[in-house]
Length: 234
Image (cartoon, rainbow, N blue to C red):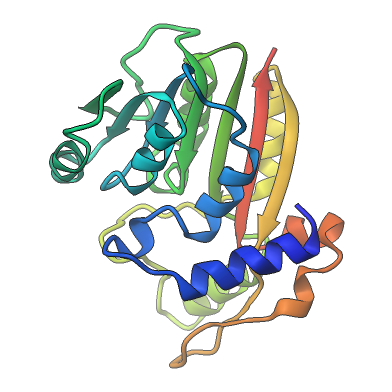
């Protein structure tokens, strides 16, 4: 993704909000993944950590034969209603640390903004790769704490205000570089490493994006707040 594309994606994200708020398919991590999905027609796809189904609907529109899964019963009930008229779609409760499918089941496995919220992110990543077919793709996004977000987290902890997310009691400070190394250890080929979003965090004020830090992308992606890896299982 070049600099102009990244800027266009961010402008689209900030200007386009639907009834799902951040759970639509226009958040930064969704937009990154969409650049690399390719043709999903007829492919068996798992989205785990699907939330309320906003991105699941997009995957179905792309022709995927989809399993949409989440650990939250409440989220799955919403997703079932949202996707009830779509064929080629199974919606289920599942734990990313123990995915209830055999090895080598899916052509593409997608996990967005989920691994940081589970007790054992390494186990979750290994499970994603396990259920991916040989030659299939595993697509993962998480916040990258080797960024200004990590600085904010350290500041809050030093001042006695632990960093938390509403409704998310677990929030591991994951890093993009660590995920790249772990995917290689899981016998994957890394096809895409990407990252977008550099923000100024000032206590008591909304975060502000610093656009000039998006360049050069070959360097800036490693320190962006939103990170993506796309890996092929060998």
